[in-house]
Length: 333
Image (cartoon, rainbow, N blue to C red; front, side):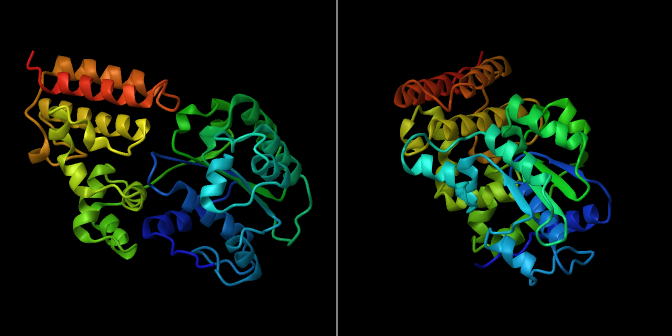
């Protein structure tokens, strides 16, 4: 299994955090900045048989065991959907239930998985380098799951370290946040992000558009590229929406549509307020609507985002979203 190189801004943060002491870390920031990558880099270094100040050696038995997802002293707590996306094995029972179609893979961190993690933290280290528990995205714990973790964070076994990675840390219980050493993710500059995207095989022209679409967050930009989002579609999107062209969102999920419209609304409000747009080039934006209409539209999008994961009728929801956008973009009052 080929392990991708750690992004330069992640390597810098890993070195900083490994020089500090603590049994529980909370890595916080918006999506696309590499929380998961940093959390895994820390866990690899903690468990490595020959660690350096820069992190894990990448060649010992411990590092190999993590690479192939079989390390006995690493417990990974994620929603089952995320574990499957990232190549981590589910428990035998969970995999069996999903294979037998008794239930779908969970989008939350299940409380039974958390209880297994608590039991894991109390066991003796198998390889003698201590144990690590990685939780990502930590905000996917419900209150029951979070409270199951809280007691272990309050009274941690001596040889276990925790790293919680979150893209919405404000949603975590205050008691969880207070038990962890906090770290705010660094935001790489555009040149660093573009160079990294080039290393991933993304052409400069595409990388530039996708990095803007992602608001400067490189991992989100890479996700957009790999999902098949056409840069030309993104560039044409604002004026297509102003025309009421539903076709610009062909094959998009409702969540993707709401996200794109939020970004368009943000940029138009920014321009109306005398600021620069963030997600689209200024030349690609339609003529500005009134701030009052844009504010009303922003509130409607916020309301739509609450039900976007379970739309009653996805086609009807799309038509409604585009109609609301068209009305907002073509009103001057």
